[in-house]
Image: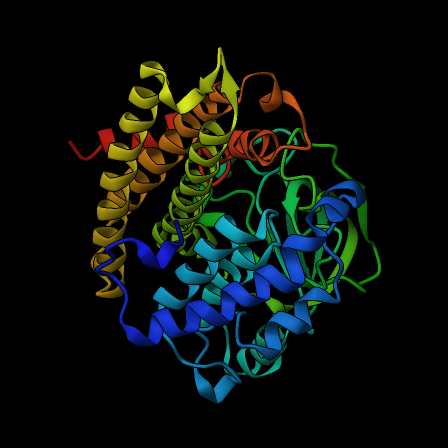
Length: 384
């Protein structure tokens, strides 16, 4: 099955035409190199300008800043096609769905003119540094500081689990510009830090159990000086900015999770048709059919819900609780699909040469990053 074969309601003809461009890029430039990039532990920086040339990066950036000025539906298509055909995590969604939006929404005119065209072209790769060794979902507990010294900030601290950490040219660093104010979230700001700044160092490329091609790193800041004009938006408003953008971030994760689950399902149907046991295809056993029938029904519901959420978001109506619910439901579905599909592969499912093995490993983190499933339930429950 191809993704456009599904009955979708969130997209129009222009979206679907764009989908073909994205798919050809994934099939030509990404999928054939997936195994090598997994082994390397990183996607080469040379891939980014190729994607930028085709308009695959940051399509929502306004035309006056070098973008296409399109809606988030185009981002979602890149996410879907990447998850279904790309086979590796490229890091594109972080740049397009998250970082670009921060700069569009809160950046100064100077910041927008300088950075957005480079994000669109792929000349600049970005990361956002929130998580610290001692704090995960509790961002108020961060210890990284940005203290004023004349017209500069001096940044000290460390971050971990940072996507695009090895490749990033520009890092949006969450730091406390005021360590005394209470509640603590009022002292958090977002500071733009260029990778060539003295005192900035990258740690190791972290050894993960999945999404091997996605460079995920430790970052260290030792007396890193940046001008105060590098503050994104207003000082002390960083936590508010982070909370405001989370619905789109979590919807982005939900989109990728749903598409990855569909790919695993489609691959498993094909596998069980071909593989035989006791003289007949595995698909002919009632248990196999019932497991797959149950998953197909849930995937059908998932696509309908995803289109609902996308349509809500395109109208700027998706609430934080709805974004959390989408992230929760689709990532939990992804894990259920991956685990049951791996089981239907039998021993082959445990071999990395089969796509289901890599997909199963990569799926485990989606219930953690962007806010754990437990945190999503907490956020939803607060609004009951």
